[in-house]
Amino acid sequence: MPMDHKVRQGESLASIANKYGFLPDTLWNDSANQSLKDKRKTQNILLPGDIVVIPDKIIKEEIIQTEARHRFIKKGLLEDLEIQLKDEFGEPRADILYILNVDGKLYRDNTDSDGLVKATIAVGAKSGSLTFGENFEEEIPLAFGHLDPIDTPSGILARLDNLGIDVLEDNSARSVSEALKKFQQRYGLEASGDLDEDTQKKLEEQYGC
Image 1 (tube, rainbow, N blue to C red):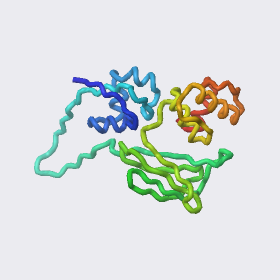
Image 2: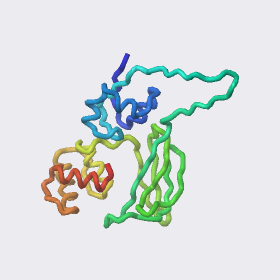
Image 3: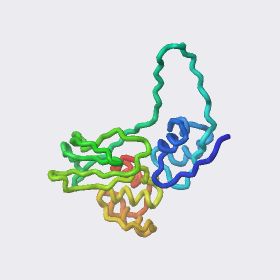
Image 4: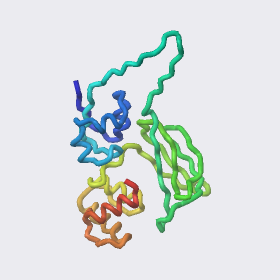
């Protein structure tokens, strides 16, 4: 019988699907989750309190030859991570040596021409850090699955903070408005302090989601 899973902070659809033995697309495309799909638009960013319906499992049978070796591969245990580094002028920081720490596993490489840090990490990764710079003097703490949707106060402020906008972390309407005005001024938008269509589009463009 299908059951409801209430999303908690730090969870993603990928980690929830892995917990119950499904692929993320299976849950996302299930008709019982259509309202969630319409509301969130992307399976990568959910809000704590969202409900994901977990359907009944369908047992798949395979006909195989006896006394022979067969290989079955479990899907959905890894997911791609991308982080873009930019300077104060918004330009990509290319060819920067970095060390990415994901739950204790280290990835050492250089950013590509677009300033991207790329890695394939385990589904359900919780936290880590990104250290970079000439002498590794810069460090960014990472909390996977903690980014809220772009139309929520916490989601707006997290994105603006990561883009170098000074924000207050109380999620109040005033804090959001003041931070949005700074963002709008930076990119030549009307400084209304509201998340209007043009501002949301620019924020998604600059942040990536």
